[in-house]
Length: 427
Image 1 (cartoon, rainbow, N blue to C red):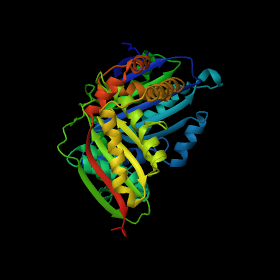
Image 2: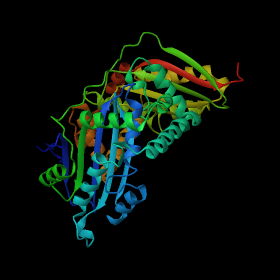
Image 3: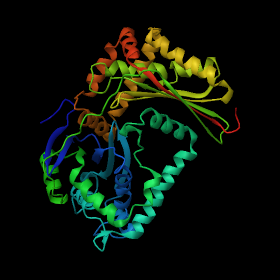
């Protein structure tokens, strides 16, 4: 089966496979996504798993040997990320390997990359039948430091706290790297048990972009991914809550000089919806770009903010506004931000804002075509949402969006939470 994006789709060994056969790139781009529901009791252990897996495998038990093997593959890149998309926690492994035709290699580099990735995933180095203790201990500290870094970076901290407050009864409140309080309780034994369960139950999607085909990739998966998985599983839809009674305001204090004002908005518009393009335009005009309302009116004209922008998670239907302000300007800043929201819902949208936002979105989508990993990330939206929308189709939809469509999208976003982080000394 081939979709409008040019990817061919199939499955092997309980894994969904997506291949874009092309000679446009000099490398093979390989992405493996493993998705699980965000949940309090699994989020921290799941986040820790890839950190431990990158330390060593049965064939390359020492971290140095693991890295040397990548060097032997003509400097292949290997990395991972842990993030959330809607109510899902995603562990994403990436490999970037040069195409065989550009080097004199005795072995197929694509095959060798699959052997490496398959072993990294399914044959980690073990001690007494569980993860190596020293690796678990070191990587627990790595994750702890990453979580502490969020607390120390007050911009990120305020953004996370706004989501935690807004979604306190939903899995979406959880940070994809988990919770510091859970780390001390993680042992090589219970982490290995969690890993086995994750290997069985996560939703796996494997992508390859490069000079290959679906049949070759299927065979490589069967040969190198020794996973006894049953049927291919699907992503459950994220829970979307759009109803808001009265916006809640939460004010917290920390040792800071500059206030952080964050707002959370809910809507029922997600990636699956016909109004998705209008919601992208709404976010772009509100605060996505340097010409946006928040940037111009809050930062430039009123000089109320050091930064002011907005983001939209299309898999959850949530938009967030981030701004840094002088603590005494809190009321003024809230008023002027709320005015931008009201203006958009009332259709106060200029032709220039429409034209510039369309141009910005067009650039982002077109630049994506030059990166194999961006093409993969875009197609993965289809997998998670169950909605197919080729990039040129999205561009066409963006071109068709009118100011009235943006006004309608704006009316679908309701202010849910105002979160303000201010200094200890301020009263």
